[in-house]
Length: 390
Image 1: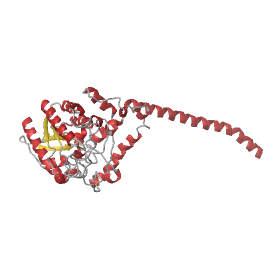
Image 2 (image 1 turned 60 degrees about the horizontal axis):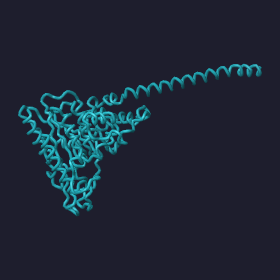
Image 3 (image 1 turned 90 degrees about the horizontal axis):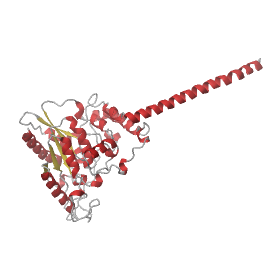
Image 4 (image 1 turned 90 degrees about the vertical axis):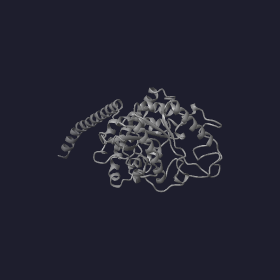
């Protein structure tokens, strides 16, 4: 009896085992084919922009008052990501059609415009809106914050190229010398991770930037697969998840104190790879401003040289601050003013508008009082241009 059962098992087992192996093999083959096809479609169609537009913001959560950016996501309920579609979809600009009684002003600039060390309601754009300016035609001035940390005119241009689709009535472009050196233009990660639109801007406006730059040659096959872009996919999900706590707290930046900007400076006249005694027009990425004016089209643009900290400490006769030796900054102001005049740009130089005590941790970041003073001045400029262009 036992021998018979043993014999039966031996006769059945090889057949069963082979069937199971074939099933497993078929599942693995089909899974592999599905994986390859999915990655191929992912590479061809690039669904990330479309996925980025699928947002809980302006639907379940209110739109954010500034573009997502965060050094400490768990404490700021915010994060830095590189999907432009998702960044704009999370912004309050994407809530819907522009109200008929709104005079829409878009602010583009660096971390000072974004509002480093400021709450959303304390930023330059927020304070301009809070002034409640009503234009002669009855429209109220509403300013929107599209500033973004890291200084680069090319970074501003990329954001501006997306911003114009939101029907601005006026664009305020806040700049400073540190955004103009040629070696800063392709530096921001936001640019390095948006290769196609950056290259399109460079080609369309014939910008003197090298599309063969090492930062822009990472477009490998693996970088375009699901695996290669898994971090971007995860960031899209995280941005939505953070919306819960952000909505509950209003916190989008971890503000835990700072080291005050230094009055005492190094006896150094260097500025990037440029040396005294003078800057040349070619040292600055002024062509990018010209491209921005073309993108704006008939929409007026106010170009503003933003306030900087002016030191009175050690070696302040050599440098204005950590960023700028006096020779470079003085030349920059003269060059920008001259080029603006030659091109009929609306330009205002507000470099010394704010007293040194109203700066926080860097030569461009302002205290709440400093922002208030700046907002009052910018608001006057907005009202003047809006009235003249109506």
